[in-house]
Amino acid sequence: RWMHRADEAMHPASTIKLLTSLAALELLGPARRWHTEWRSTALPRAGVLDGDLVMRGAGDPKFLIEDLRAVISALREAGLRELRGDLLLDGVLYDPAVTETAPLDGDALQPYNVAPMAAELNFRATRLAWGTEAAVQADPPLSGFRWVDRLAKPTGPCRDASVSFRLEGVRFARELLVEGRWPKACGRGERHVALGDPEEFAEALFRAAWTAQGGVWVGSARRSDGAAAAAPHLLVRWESRHNLVDVVHDVNKRS
Image (cartoon, rainbow, N blue to C red; front, side, top):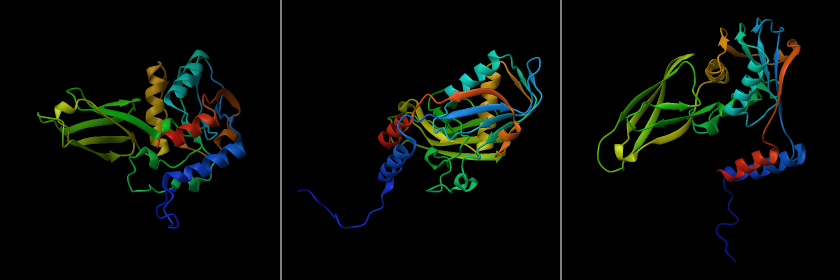
């Protein structure tokens, strides 16, 4: 009864997610949950891990900051207080070429452009807030990043507001510049921003979360696919709080 250009080929855009969602439900099952293992290359002694901590990724698409904080709490409750090794991201479950996918539109700061990785943390994104007299804030916090507010904040009505972001600096010593116009009448603005490569983001996020719970860490984060095979000691096995139905709902309803 209602038809318009029905025989013309169109770019599927976000509707293609219906196919991937159906495939996931049929292949994995709606009750599927993911188990992320946190292993070590040595046994902790007297609260000190003199070895590497390995995150063996299972492809959990929603391993959020809340999950990371819970894992850290479990490690701290077990008596671990100091890490003298690196955080190794074991994403061997996915082919490395998958994580090298170029941004769809060239904007690497957009969270939707983050390429899949089996050992991913918090979508590799943080939520920035700006606009009032307070400084630019990031949630969750990232250690080693500096937020620079260069917004023009004129008085007057809230219109013609525009914000741009620009990363400067070198690896592990970065600044994110927030620029543009944001009239004071617009109040507080927010946007999720994807930052850095997997290792850079994991180091910044983990360090901030670990030290917030009183831990000490002198290492860095790096990707090491297959590292879990050389890490015989299982410290925490984390089951995802969300099953596949929850994830499919998010993917298809929030677009």
